[in-house]
Image (cartoon, one colour):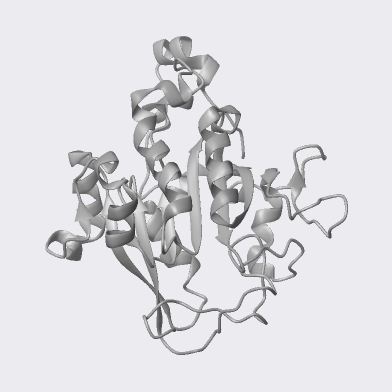
Length: 300
């Protein structure tokens, strides 16, 4: 941990695109307690924070400190507090319009020095059944302002994770995202990933972008068994320092055959008790109306 209390990681630590840093990292790893400082934009019910906490369980001494968790939805904030009741009086959870917090001055003053930013901006501008307005949709405005500010920040985050629906990667907003990452000095990877890829009986493919600020880097052929799952995700984009044709790559590239995936667990394994199967059936009218947009998978 540096004098400001920020997480540091060793240049000799194992690395992979799933979150470990490559050999160009200048950070130091210790076994002492350290805090990963997190800012959640579009925080929803807190699943990004929960996932980061689970990912750090095998990293002795590491914990997550939420600097801010921001969402404009009263319902989402209520669920967040159900998951993290201690934030009720901490000031971490903020019901705010992110567009009002996205100036360079505000981002530096309130969120500068974070280790990780997670962002799940509104998906409606990019959905398959929407109007495909992309950046012209007013709901895309707050994320666009963050991207405009990112290269100008004095203390940008070390790592960024962006999540959205499939189709986002075809948008002008995505092009603005990677342009901002390049200008701000990040290396990055883009994926399509679904819970089904790791054996969860749910087909919900989403777009993910992972970015690390130089000198942090990705190592694309790490052998650490903890990170094997990322091989099952489809790598769809990358920054200029990466060349799949010349590097040891263990990813499922979009142009290659599908890598074998684990056998999905049965839905019954996730239920708290016996349930009448008929009660789980999707109504015929719903299927008829939305079948074009339903992702269906079968695993027995």
